[in-house]
Image 1: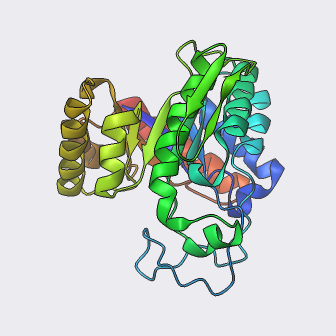
Image 2: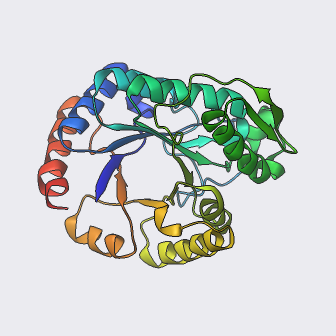
Length: 286
């Protein structure tokens, strides 16, 4: 099993010294990947419930620092040699795929093929409103954007003709270092996300650790993959979890390949101590 760290660009990790320490220490302790999050803005007084907390609010409050998800990964790429660089997640329907294709191909090239694009369709309606985007068509925009990205990464010239994105033929260079393009992992724990992962994903990342719920979602994913003529066994499964060997066993039994953990501290001393403990007691034994 592989292990990642999430939230590596947010809150205290917006500080470059702490991010650098986190990245280098995590790589040395055996972590496979680092995952950034995204919100371009957080509208004051938003009413849309945040789906990952009991109170419906983003951890850290409205003024928490959330840097761009890609620039910190470029920073980390220059400091590390093998840890994978992932977004978990980029809110894909808020961006034009031509820009995303260029940015991810560049990061993948600079990092030697270490990039994963984790995407979500978004949950914060007020953020879409601020961007002048229709929240209610975000799912369709997400599906088209994934297909458009792959056209840019794998075709030359590249073309895509859909309802929301329409371009080509055109030249999009550089291409990613990964010959089949940057792998796209679908985030979210809704039925729509599970079905999207089956139809279009290279991976599926529900931000859950509840085994019955994961089993249900993976069933939906496999059904959608079969309908699309895809091999569901090739879709890599990730989830969040705890740094506990016993807690990992039921996750492995449902096919989880990667568990993504929260950072074990928020200063250099606590990070070093916590990451080394996970490396020795969990990663080395998994």
